[in-house]
Length: 132
Image (tube, rainbow, N blue to C red; front, side, top):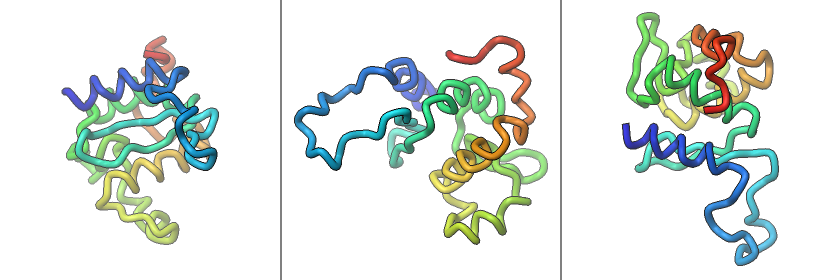
C-alpha cells in the first residue's frame, strides 16, 4: 500500500521535479515528457512516458493493486500483469520475464504499440478514472 501511495505522489507531482535540476550535470537532467514511476521503495524506479504514466495508475491499480508479486490466473505477473505469452519477445529484447523492472519496461513497449488494448483493465479509463 505504501508503495502504491508513493507512486501516486510522484505521478501527481510529475510536472515539478522533486530535486532542483540546476545542480545536476547537463547529462543527468531527466528527459522531458517522462515521469519517474516508483513501483517499490526497495527497487530502481522507471521512467515512463508522461501520457502513459498518468493513465497507468488506474490501469495498474485495477490489474494488480500495484503489487509486484501479483500473479494472474493465466500466469500474468507483476504490477502490469504481463502475460507469459510475451516471454519470448522479452527474451529477444534482453529482458527477463522474472524481473519486475523488465516487465514494466516491456509494458511501455506494449503501450507504445497499441495503447492500453493489451490490458483487461483498460475499461477503467473509459469509466473516467484516468489522471489520478
